[in-house]
Length: 373
Image (cartoon, rainbow, N blue to C red; front, top):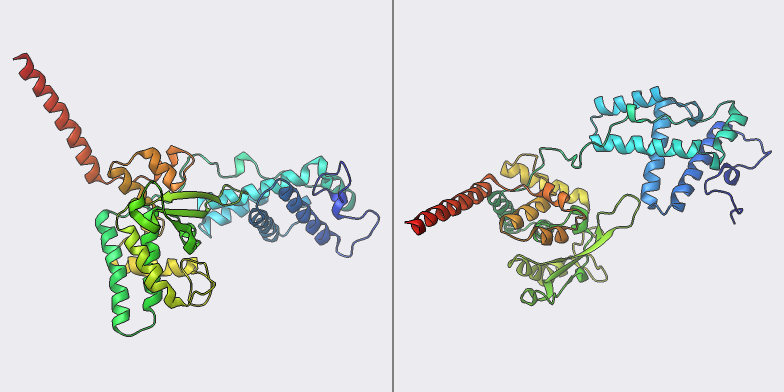
């Protein structure tokens, strides 16, 4: 048991007083990282978040070739500069790296954890906070996505789905085994658009995640999609939500897949909606490679990616006049402003909207003139 009054991650929990260390610097650093992990786990952060931060701190220490009690702000400047210029990482990625180092330094310098005192006694110096506002990337806007990323136009989306189907037919006509994975991936792409899902949300669906909806009985067994692996807030478990079916063609797509095609994979005992040829479920890399191949074959720009299916879902619903609040709930956005970022309404939709309101204004004005006459 942890002694009463001792903070999780404290030096006294990971280093025994009076015992000499064979590799003192390495062993103290490892103990600090273990304490850092325990402190974050005590805050109920997800293990994946904790491990990611630990890996980042180790990567920084390796880059500067120094232990935390010898770090300086100049080292952070050099490291982040290298990440920007040589590795060309995204703004949000660089900021997450710097935040990991900031959190570690905050932990290491907190008196409650005793690491400053321990390092001073053993190495004659102590850790300091090396990440500050003036040497890190600021989070200055709500949307930091690549500005190239966009939704499909309706014509592009129709062409994309038609191309998916054509590839299945072509592979099958040649008698190749690859038609089953091609059929699966085509259905995945259509399902992602049908319910406005992210890539991992789609990939992690199980067969039982589709169900009847009391509000949409005409969709039969596919009136509802239960998303159990939604995008989580940092350090939190996956968010769950239910998405109602809105497109009339969706049940036909899913019915064919689950009754005719999926059983051909030999799925006995496998609950995954999209089984892999070699494992339980299809992987993200496989979906990416298939998507990119089709995109290139159609001559689409790289602003279109898997997430464009979700962007298109939001855009096309808004263009069709669906209530924005309903769309927000469907895609699981906490704030309406986030949904608005996803909405890439076409110029044609804007022209139609403008024309409709101008025509209504003119008709109202003319009607007023006739009344006066």
